[in-house]
Image (tube, rainbow, N blue to C red):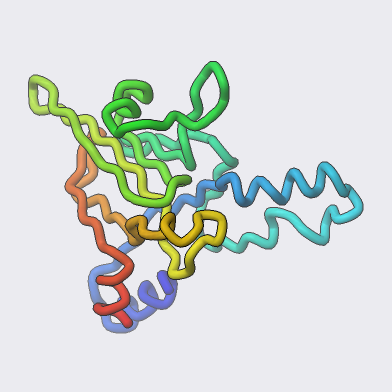
Length: 174
């Protein structure tokens, strides 16, 4: 889709957009490595090479990528246990200590803290952009927010947030 839009803009002589694109592997992609460790006979038949990400810089699971003052990762690990830092967005802002964006969890959590001198630290957790219900969550557990979040005016760890729900995206773009 992105390449198609890029080509359309070239054809119509519109302003070109050439975004920096990053793909951060998550725990689900990590299942491939666990399967290969258990069954090496599948090496070459399954692997990261099946995850096609043309034009994207690829980053290993749990690598923290810092761009314009924001730390991005599938999730941020507790230094003592290696488990994901959880809890409230305030807890995460305290523990991570910088503006961050992560996936991993279904739903949407956002918070910010303003500091003297106009500096703002943002925390964003958004990890669900799909239509299906997850069986493991049961009937009551699938009511979480689903959508995408666009960060505008990103600079020095600050940004303007624009959240777009899956329902809105379906109505608008069908």
